[in-house]
Amino acid sequence: MSTVTIFHNPACGTSRNTLAMIRNSGEEPKVVEYLKTPPDRETLKRLIAATGMSTRDVMRRKGTPYCELGLDDPMWTDEQLIDFMLRHPILINRPIVVTPLGTLLCRPSELVLGILPNPQRGAFIKEDGEQVINAQGKRVQRQ
Image (cartoon, rainbow, N blue to C red; front, side):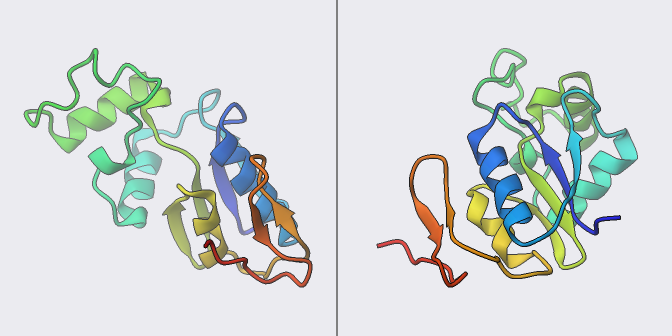
């Protein structure tokens, strides 16, 4: 059983790149397609707390009903925002990755490299053509 879990949306390029980097480290993660199988309240609260981010910071705005629901209004409590995320899982930003080394919202996808238990096993190029890992398995620095 893998020690890595990704809350994944296969329609999201960032999520696909993150999943591919996890696999490039030799891990076959538990993949939770959270739009099909949303986390329950306690799991979602635990994930948010583990990221160290606020509930609002874990919410996705683009391509969601965030604005039409008026969720930018500061009147909404964290519990109410979680209610919205449970009713509309698309509001949960992705991908969230859980490993023995930590839990992160991996935006950008390269953030996952800091919490993977194993190093990258080979070169990795993101879907947009950006090289992240060279042939020696080392991180390529952005210029």
